[in-house]
View 1 (cartoon, rainbow, N blue to C red):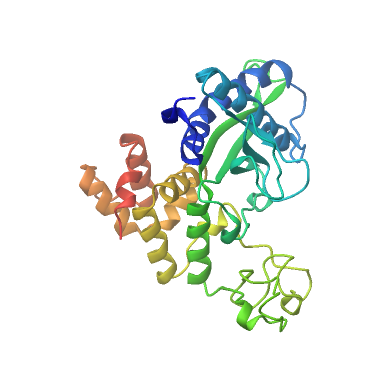
View 2 (view 1 turned 120 degrees about the horizontal axis):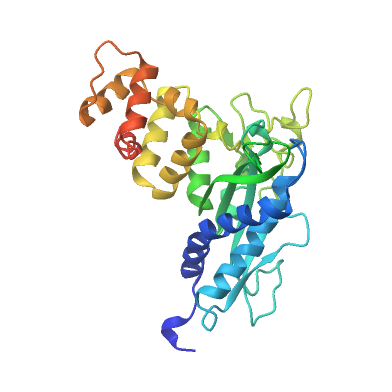
Length: 321
């Protein structure tokens, strides 16, 4: 193989990101024919199936873009570890314990658009994420097969995000600290662990000192549950309720393209979150910059006009410091 065509983790990540929109369209096309059903139950497990189909169709796209030079494929983890997929070399043995034969890993999450977002968590510790590991999120709903006669529905992917997992984890962790949370340091573990063998290093604790993951220090267990489980909620992790948190949010959005893409993705699908993130005065400033007449209008109407007339308005939100 020509040295110029040798695959790198960076190039593989880019190819997977570029293949994802095509894969999602193919899933929707197939689902309309083969996965139609009556009822459209939430909690059906359909999200897990869509994640698996993403891997299947993404492999199809990757193999057809350049069949001769595509030397890698997606593999599905066979155990119940954190990641769902790994991008592996076709001509190498794959050992998930040592990462031999791997280029990068992908964690897939899915959320029904009408379900409680707490069912989706991205809570893996940042130190365990590779530089090119990816986070995939699929937002889907039950769509009528025939809008005239809505007897049958099928799972339809409304939107997706795929980007560098470490960028999103960095945003998550910065906001966790800004809310008064902390991360366990092996030198001062609440369980009194020997620093050389402490298994709790990096585990998140909330502002009350309660562990956020089951693997956190046992002495920090919540009163009525094993752990708090708020850390990494796909929507709640970018909420801000203080000036320090807002500063961190805006700093990341301005300086990290993946963080900006993730925030835009969440706010696109949960528009009330976006409306609450920015002050009325800030929405007014954007409207004035865009030439939108807002005299006498309430915040909700100002936002509606901005969204209707300027689809790229989030680039203006990104500039707010």
